[in-house]
Image (cartoon, rainbow, N blue to C red; front, side, top):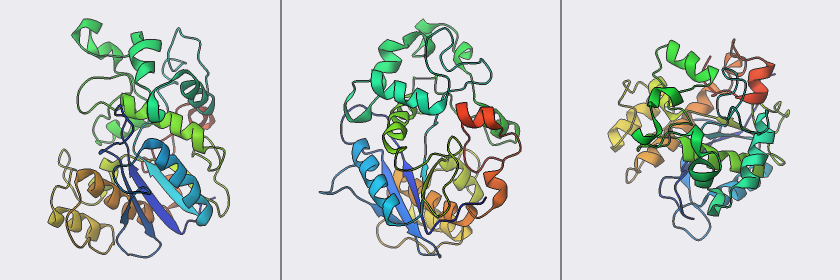
Length: 286
């Protein structure tokens, strides 16, 4: 079954410590070709992660909406038969999200404590941890994307540097646990006919599909954003240009609207039941 939606949302995510996050951007569009619109939390200012969760549940109840989040929904599992080998943790995605949410006491769904204390030995923070290559484990969808020439995605075990996705991903797993009772999460849950759904996205896939060169997927001016929007059959963004987080969210929402009707994206050839229940899959990788 290819799910049907009337709205599309993309969320550029952040795992930063604190309660309000400049790095979070939320864009929403209707069916058609109108440019996605950046959403803002009640009261203005920057989004908190909990505010995003509350907004998602509310928006999901208003109309069938496809929500795309830019973080890894689970650590690698298949290659080593476990998320954190040697540690006693659950072995399915939804159970692991519940575990992460239960053991983290960080504010606003943060998860830095898991990386820095609870399961510290699994994460690379610098040379003192040994050889970085020993931590570079990937999910099957990430390896598949790399083999197709997409570039090597970051692993959730790499917790150092500006490009790391570890903190954002584990914070995102807490959000998934919070919202899953209201909105299913693909491919861990089957889509509901006529309902809303959460998927994992990789904003670089949308940017590459819109013609942005490999390694130059960030759009830092209005002309670059509007060229990319034109390529995914969207009307242009008018007014002041958004920051790069906002541009990523706007373009990815428009890309989701264009590609979500394609049956092939919902049935990637390598995706089987084990992968779907443990590691999940990035929407758009086939």
